[in-house]
Length: 121
Image (cartoon, rainbow, N blue to C red; front, side, top):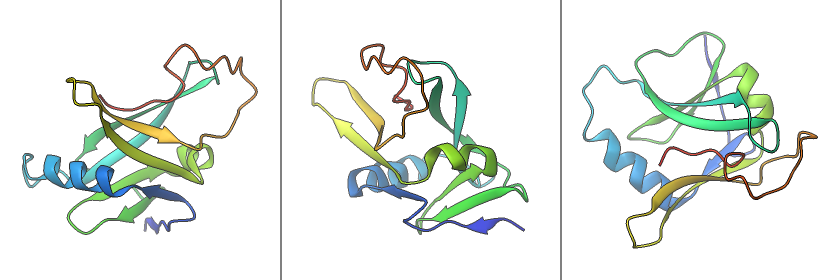
């Protein structure tokens, strides 16, 4: 059975919750949540992304946000613990989810490549 996540594991700002709630009104009922995942790459060695998922696995943690769920597998959760997901709309057509408070993983840490912060623009 999946584990319930708390705000000590992962948080979403109000703008991120509002946008995800809006996006969930546009998907079919088979979608169980939005999956946050980690992949190798970026300045920190890890990049993050999000996608809709129609499945919650036994090794997933779930943050219940009312109208939607955020799903994170146990391997990714180790990289995300304490991270805040925000939604930033600059008003010029560049709106994106951003990951704040990312821990450093010993990569280059240049901060200029733009892929270490993840997101799902």
